[in-house]
Length: 304
Image (cartoon, rainbow, N blue to C red; front, side, top):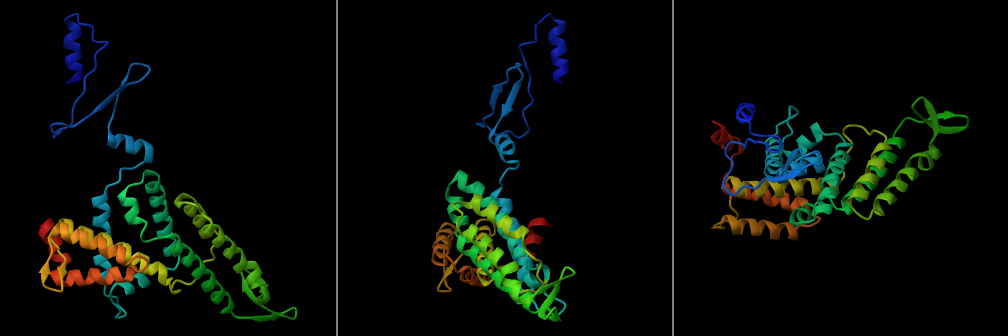
């Protein structure tokens, strides 16, 4: 179409070198803004907020999609039933995620928080409530303890008049466990503690993670990490349920709040449970029960 118009104008001796044409997307709403800039060579360049975010960050944040993913994962874990008879959230966490999963989650979270810290805003203030520096440091210290337990549980053999254990086809004296393995990792924990912002914390945690020795799959996870993980999942699940699925908070089991009141109550609950995400998780389950919310039924209603 553009070429046809241009050829028609040219055929009528109209100079089109200073003109350009553009096709607007279907469904463009009235009042929508498109910013036009001209490059040095005279080529028009369209820039809008979405394009700008893609160029600067490589992606466009979509809060609703994030909440939907978190909620779907939450209900998948809550409704899980294992073949060994164990069921529920913790069973899913233990069956499907190994020990290092904690650090993978924190690295991703710190990366998001580092970006949000640069931009500021309410979303950053809310999201930083869960995976705080205290949680990250506690999880790193927990690893150090679990590593020492793991190494000291290895079979000892008597070689060269000292007790040793085999590690990567080498015999390491038991007395050197702390010097060779534990002390270096604790030094890396100190670096995490000294981080001044989320970008530095992310960098130091990545360094810690790269030096970790793999622990057995079923190594118990850090309680502080689990609490933060449950808390952030519970918060965004409740937020999504309230905004998009008609779920409301009941006071004393009978008085039903409005949507806005429910959101404000959730915010108050988030602040009350800072550092104790497991309490927000318990509150989420109460709200789900009060509303009789059935996730699978709701999904069938939406996508039938």
